[in-house]
Length: 265
Image (tube, one colour):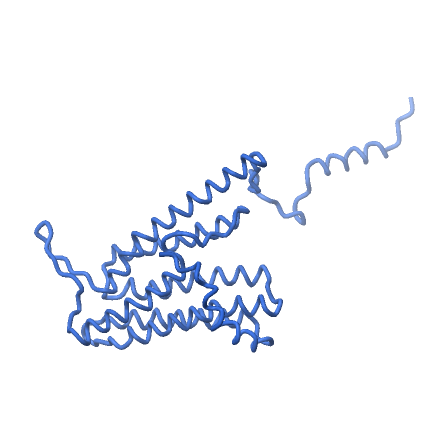
């Protein structure tokens, strides 16, 4: 269920606003989106304490996720419309996206709604999914948004499932979505924990899928252009202001010898 391919359908809600932000830096918009993601994570984290029962924080956090995602889409649109695209801006956007994922999903995963073991697997799946996409671009392959679980999917799910959890608790007094016994042990799963389990499984499958796609793309390039050398260097790069190349030093010595007066016999 990759919703990233439907990004363009959100343009009617983003472009009119971007057209009015000519004098606003896209980086400022990115910072606002990151801050809202942090707020969402904090609200999710404090929503699950049994003693305080701050269940309304689930809805507030879901709203913050939507607004944060809107600003995340808005910064790129402003940059493209007003000719403010830059490598630094693209780098900042990727970094902030990863931190936003950590804030939002982390707030859910480490809250009292979820099992910590599923939370660890969830973090691995989500971060590796994003890493596989950006790493493909770093080695010269196309940037990958493909896969079962893209970033748009994650934002939508992080909006829907907290609201489902809120409705279950407030309307049906059901803290857990599922209670069952297996191998003599009792297990409980909340609605929000379903989200974390889904991210843990499908996130890692998406990372694997993107890795396979990138590998196949590189294999096709090698079939056409031959094996491409890596830009990585075997030796560490030295500071040219401190060290001199050894061949250059040897040339200086030979010049000094040649300029010296020859001894007469």
